[in-house]
Image (cartoon, rainbow, N blue to C red; front, side):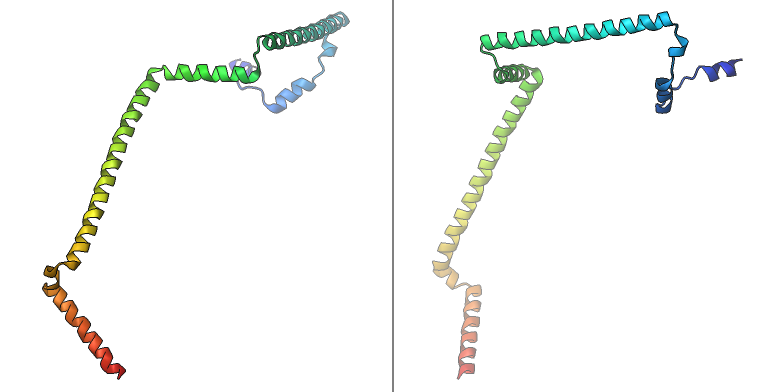
Length: 166
């Protein structure tokens, strides 16, 4: 008995083909003429009510637009006001305040760090520039073994080239 009951009362939702079969079924033969007339009258009445509601809604929308025009309100002003209000509401939230504070603090620290790095790099380049300019002209460097060795090699190479060119 339960197996038959389960077969008749399916728990699965209707599929597309099931819906099509129900939509194409002709139930008018199951209705009496009186029921058909009542349903037709109800259908006409519902369609009339829907038409009336659409007309009323349209009239109310026109009236709304007229009032807004008299008050100097237009779509752009409304959007600006909505945006301003939303922005203000967001700025007053605790999450926004904490995030703003954290990012502001991080930005200050990053600015200070970049400034320190820039100062350090500038100082280092300045020191290197000063060191190179002064070390070349100093007699101590010319007397160093490295400089003497380099000078001797250059002289040897120049002499060798002169001999080969003759």
